Length: 99
Image (cartoon, rainbow, N blue to C red):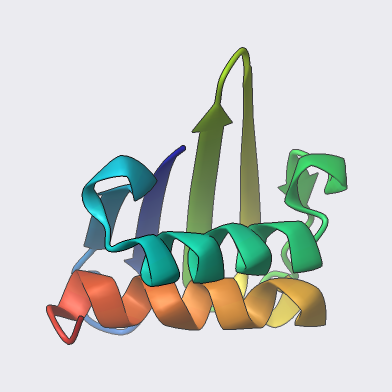
């Protein structure tokens, strides 16, 4: 499973990116990441979660590819579904190099 994450916008406009392949992770961490994706019902989320117009807010784009399926979700900071927050937090830690 490959996951691509990008956070853009915000006050400074500096993007944050991470790409993760579960095949390169330790087994326990790969299983945890898969669990986060399943818990978020990621493949059932709409492709775009309409952001409200707010200046200096973050925008997120998240793509998950597994076997023959790929899904991308784009959303604004204020419209992130609660079920997706743990996955975004994990990916932001990874993008910061905290993982």
